Image 1: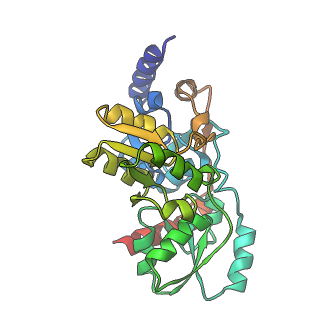
Image 2: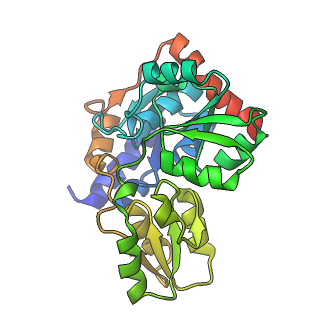
Length: 305
């Protein structure tokens, strides 16, 4: 079976079975082409609430599928590849955060969306990379404990100096592979290129960027920008997607090593098998877990209004 034949069969099956396919921006191009919605993790979760499909397949990592289930508990939600996790989401557990809350009882605990459902149950507010500054600025309390990404937290703290933001050591191992040496090497060859970076990168990298933003913000800037050359400082699949979207522009990966192996674990065949009922994993969550983990997301939505 060729890629095109497999894609055609996936499209036929999803229509026949009324199944919605969600693909995170870091998924492969061949998966993008069969997805109903493409985007950042929380954006996909919101799209899932609006589809009339009874079943949703998440092509991404586990915490993303959990968030879909939290917002659409009446739907059957599947993770296309059961092994696709997120090292950052798994760095902390609720016991660690409960201990920190005892040590810092006057702090509001803010969780990056890249956390497990269980960890969200002990947090006060959730944020995305694109909404974090606005949400935290709107929190009445000036004392914030931000988890788990200290690089994103450092970038947020610089935008909101009036807040006292306590960070913990944690972060995305994929974005940490990007170094200042990578910037020097690439810019020596492309001195006029715009440098776009995700705030999960190290602060020394972020400080040199022309744009710091979420994956969606990076792609939008590059697509709409008048410049011809862009250096992309996030997961390398974004370079390929931009090449397809804007073949008249040049997109350069900042580091060949900025590859998320968990995101790349999902294959087109995984999606096919999930549709056939012979693969993937259904996300099961108790009503109590859904209710407890949703509180910090509901608070994010309230503060973001």
